Each structure stands twice: as structure tokens, then as C-alpha cells.
Image (cartoon, helix red, strand yellow):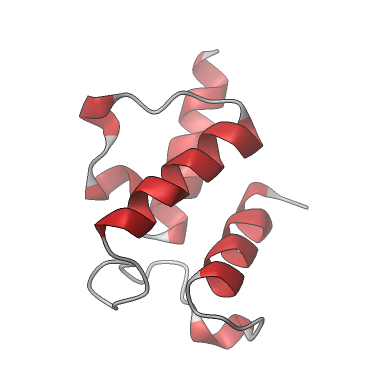
Length: 83
């Protein structure tokens, strides 16, 4: 499974309680759409760290990195490339 597929599955099943792919747009804001709150973002960070072997630093916990599937995928890819 690709990073995007794993991330979409995580959000869909844990926060939207569905497997209906149409319920989540890749560029949709997770916070503004109500899919996640601040606690959900922390859980997302834990998932990214455990699943993809990256470390999310405090200064990286910003919407530009984590507030959509597309942003999170790009962030994970950048972090893995830098390792």
C-alpha cells in the first residue's frame, strides 16, 4: 500500500468511521472539515512516526505539513528522503 493509501485508510476508518473513499478528498482540510480535532492531529502524528519511521519535530506540527492527506504525504516523503 502506498503512503497515500495507508494515510487515507487511517483517517477514513479512525475519524470518519467509514471505508467510503468518496468521503475524504486528498486536499480537504482535516481540521476545517471537522474530520479531526487537535487530539486527532496528535494521533495522526503518532501514526506517521510509527508507520513510516519518521520523527515529527515540534516546529513541523503545522497545517502545511499535516492538515490534509496531500500535505501529510508530501511531508512524509520529504522526511524519508532526508534520512
